[in-house]
Image (cartoon, rainbow, N blue to C red; front, top):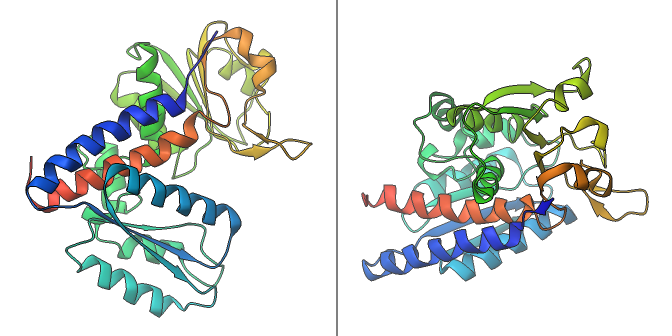
Length: 283
């Protein structure tokens, strides 16, 4: 069993981004990321701080807009319009979930697709579907980097994705498919779940249930990627996979924390760099 070190892989990605950022700066271009956070959700605050830190490490210009929880849809829309028209901002990210009186969908649709570094806009989602995209959603893209880091070939392998969210499950399946894996998506209504998962060469768990995946659900020698960020019965951070139960059965496994988490932010940096290049017509 090998533990995949997400921090090390993420550092490689960020170092590469930093090098390319330095080259852009010589041409007078500094990639810029705007992060909008509405209200004071503690988890969102942590994510935003981590994003600011990563921007600093990569040499980006970053701006945070911390809006009051009572911000109206109109005010939020106006800010997005302003950022869409601001040439110093290449990427716009609105931290989800938003307070309940605001419409996530309206916000996602309003961000210019070429500045949508989360790749949530329908235009970008469609591009991922057909395999001709500018950006990939950060978490699935990070998962692919982790799988690549193992040297395991995906072609012809059976991959099972647990979870069907628009942010992880669905795009994850597309990316695996683009690399010629045979993909099955499972979810809360799937029957005979453990039969399906225990046949997977690659298992990606994104169900949001602490320690849900046990050893009997995993094939001997599988690559197991845990996207979950949960709390166990003692309030300790854990994933969707019962790491201690499963680890001896896998060839590779990601820990939580220190697996997929660091990759998500590294891929956001990569997307922001890509956006800066596209907007400045740089190949």
